[in-house]
Each structure stands twice: as structure tokens, then as C-alpha cells.
Image (cartoon, rainbow, N blue to C red; front, top):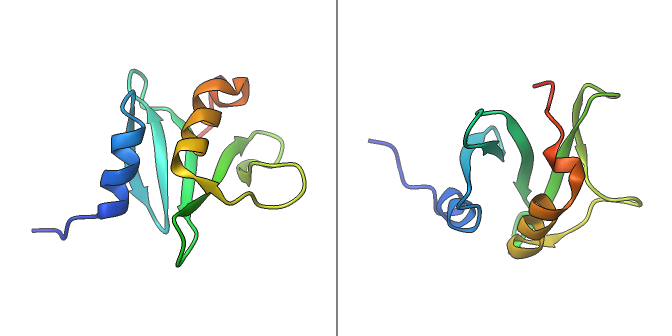
Length: 94
């Protein structure tokens, strides 16, 4: 039996219209209908903050969201961005 993951439970409770999977040191937010990845969240150690990633078709990899440097987002802020920014509605290559 696997050990419960409180971070996974916390993210799943916030992203109720999506599926959430653990993927390495991050968590992938998946479209519930297509199972396509929408975003990734990586917990920032020793905080209640997360780094948000989007899939870059140009770079062919997950890329940090933000203009200057990594943003340290509360989970509610990350959820709001994923729900409202058109960038996260584009079909992902992976």
C-alpha cells in the first residue's frame, strides 16, 4: 500500500475539474476529458508555494510560467492562472 501524498490531495482539492498525477518531483494537471497535460506544479521546499509550468512547443519541454524569473505562487493563485490564462487551454504536445 502506498503512503498518502498530502500535497497531491491538496492540489486535487483545488483543481476539482482536472485530474492530478504525481510526476517525479512535480504534479501534472490533466484535462479530465482528454487526459492531456495542461500544467505542472512543483512544490517549493519549506514553503506553501508552488512553481507553475506550461508546455512550450518551441522548447519542447515544460517551461516556468512568468516573465522574469520563477514565480512563487500560492495554490489558489496557480489555480486561477490555469483556469483563466488562454495559454493553458492550448493542446499540449506531450
